[in-house]
Amino acid sequence: MREFITVLGDAGVAWPLRSSQMPRVGMLNAGPAAHSAAILDPFYRGLHELGYIEGQNLAIERRDGAWKPDRLPALAAELVGLKVDIIVAWSTPAAHAAKQATNSIPIIAAVMADPVGDELVASLARPGGNVTGTTFLGPELVAKRLQLLRDVVPGLARVAALTGAASPLER
Image (tube, rainbow, N blue to C red; front, side, top):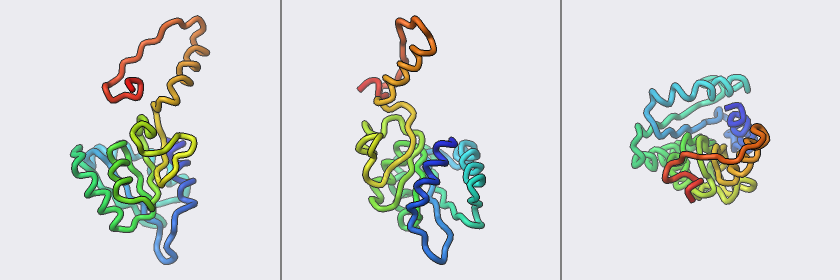
């Protein structure tokens, strides 16, 4: 989470801040508000550690999809209409909806499996466009993780991986 807050802070340098208003963050979640509150506590603590306090020097516009992916495009468009300075998308479907809604507002996407394979960014090294964020399983990282595993477990000969059908390992 700390790395994600750093990415958000770094992206904040490029925020086109309005002179008379505090920065506005649009948050797009695929799940319901109750779920979102539980997973976002570390995010809010990180913002607070960086000096951002909602209602004092930061406004946050939250939109929750209630696990209905078909709602995400309208919610993303709503955030764009509110002229938020940045969009934080908390899943790959949310990031897709935000990317379809704008090509100018910076989008920080968290909890993505394969941003390159899911066509959110051009590459991990040079994302391009207006989407950046964190990934936990992109195919570029698989070889590195296996190498780290071999370093930790000398003599390792076999590794098994259980994946879902849409996993980057299945591509």
